Length: 311
Image 1 (cartoon, rainbow, N blue to C red):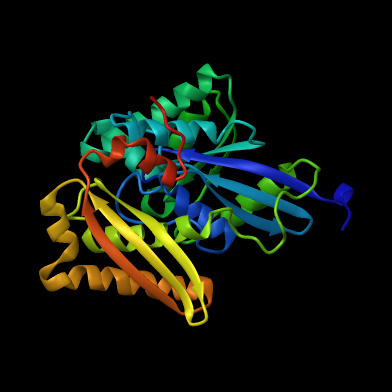
Image 2: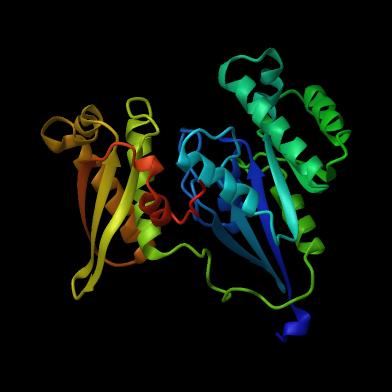
C-alpha cells in the first residue's frame, strides 16, 4: 500500500472524569490500552490507542478527565487533556448522558459531572472549536430523554455531529468508527500496522499495577496514590520488574499492605497475571510501598507519569 493510498487521523477523546473515555478507546482499538476503574480521574496522561480500518489508521488520544484542578497533578492532567486537542484532526467529546441529566438536580457527583461537561463545552466555544459529540451509556436512559438531551447540546453550536453510544456494550460504536474513518484525511500512517499503543513498557507496567490497586482498594484508598516502575530487566527466565507504590500517609501504607502483606500480595498477583498476558513471557514482579507526602506536587513524579509540569 503506497502512502498516497492511505489515510490517518489523530482523534482527541476528551470529557469529564468517568465519562467513559478509556472504555471507549479500548473498545475502538479492540484491545486494552488504557486502564479502567470505578475511580474518577483514573487516566492521568495522554495515551494513544491505534486502530486500523482498511487503508485508514485511527490514532485515539485518550486524555485525562477535564475538571477544576487543585493540585499540581490536577493542573498537569487538565493541561494534558486540552493539549491533546492541539494538532488533532477530530475532537471527540464524551458525555455520560445519565450523569449529565441527573446533574440538573445538582446531586453529588452527578451535578459535578454536568458542571465539568458544561465547562468543556464553554472552553470549546471560546476556542472556536468544533467537536463530535458522543452521548455515552445510552442503555441507562429512556430514549425520549436522550433525544431531548441530544437536541439541547446540539443547540450549543459546538458539535458538527452527534452519536449515541454505549462504550461498555458496543452500541453505536460501529457507526462512530465508520464516520471517523470516512472523515480521516489522506496521509501516511504514523505507527506500524501491528502497534496498538504508544505507551512505554515501564509506564504500561505501572498502569497495570495502578489499575489493580484501585480495583482492590477503590473504597478504602483515596486518590493520593501512584505507581512507578523503578527497574525493568530482561532475563533468560523472563522479565524482572521492580515497582514502588507511593501513598501520602502512613495509614494508607497499612491499607495497601494489608495484614501480613496479604493485600499487596493479591494486588501483585493480579498485576503479574495481566503483565504475563500482555508481554507473553514470565514476569517476576516486586512491589514496594513508600510514604511520600505531597508526591502529587513533585515535578519528578509527574514526569514519570508522562505529564508536563504545570506551575
